[in-house]
Amino acid sequence: MDLHLETDAVEGRRAGLERALRDAVRGGRLAPGERLPATRQLAAELGVSRNTVKAAYDQLVAEGYLTARQGSGTRVAALPPADDSGPPEAAARARAPRFDLRPGSPDVGAFPAAAWLRALRRAIATAPSLAYDYGDPRGRIELRTALSGYLGRARGVIAPPERIVITSGYVQGLALLTRVLDGGVVAMEDPGLPFHRDVVRRNGGVVVPVRVDAKGARAQEWRDCAAVVVTPAHQYPTGVTLHPERRRALTDWARARGGLLVEDDYDGEFRYDRQPVGALQGMAPGQVVYMGTASKTLGPALRLGWMVLPPQLLDAVADAKLHSDHHTESIGQLALAELIDSHAYDRHVRACRLRYRRRRDQLLHRLGARRRVRGIAAGLHALVEVDDEARVLARAEAEGLAVGHLGEHWHAPGGEGRPQGLVVGYGTPRQRVYPEALEVLGKVLDGT
Image 1 (cartoon, rainbow, N blue to C red):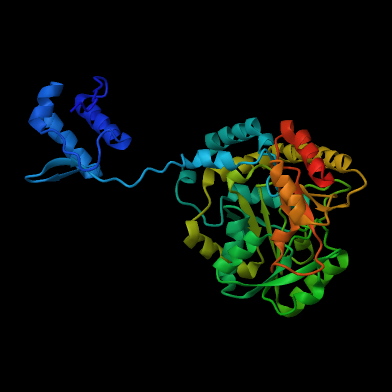
Image 2: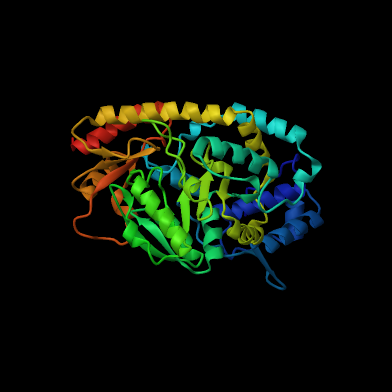
């Protein structure tokens, strides 16, 4: 029997024999149950020592490729059927759309790699040795101090460094807060991001809907809750800005009832018609948990977020953070602090604001006046109203276009008379493919 075994002198005789036998079993040249030559016989055929063959057999028995029983010799083991679907990466590429206009991500191709590298080098060069040890669960003081100044001047947030907790993104902050609330009722906007509702439920919270209209979250629907989660600067996904009357109603409710407001300021820096609307937290710092992230300004891969907490919640949230992952990784925190202190972060945000405004304008120009587009004053997405979501989505899929839709954001499926629309993330695609993506979107909406 010719086993087609070849050994490579570079990798060593034993390792080469193991590899060759392993490949023969995987490739089917050695069938399950087939008996292998005796160690003495195979050693003589290959010109190696018997101990080399025995060691190779023993290794493959330990890995499960071979079986060995006294009196029966060494045989090929029965392996599970091969998976012909290919590696997961290949399957994911096969499913990937030609054009991605789904909301939720910035143009990660615009990540300021050179500025980040400079900040990282400076941070590492000046970091104390203790920066590489376990740290404060609230986060590095350098970043908390830098954020205190930045959030004050850019978003109007009252953020002393001692009241800031650094998290591994917004989702972790929401999870920590839900655990601290210990099973309380949390009101969340309807429509809103379903993943965030899942985060609250998985961490013991009870979710109730708060309907959103042209003025934002409706005031009469949050009365009996422990906390209300809102996106006041640019509601997701409708794009409305919380009306001043609703802002006052929210803060009045929180003060009168001892309730908690959670402000998700996910893309508050990006306002195109005027200066960004100031954070709700500045109106009631003792009742609002302000939550921000670098995911939209820099990129989700950094996993850097922050919470500005009322004093009464600080210790409980810091303890929950400690028992979650001890603290967010420190080197990235130091690099972001350096980026903010050098004002490179501000320059990057300004450049992104101009870039996304141009993209928004391109979107509006392509769709023209025939389409009603909402939420265009800010953010990285827009809501395009349609008459029949299902039909438009089917056309989009046929054209290889991925896009969000309003229907997937409601708390409960169905519902007569609800508005329908596409949630278009114009920040997501790379710049070189964006014009073509818009042409495909226009074709899908026109039904041509």
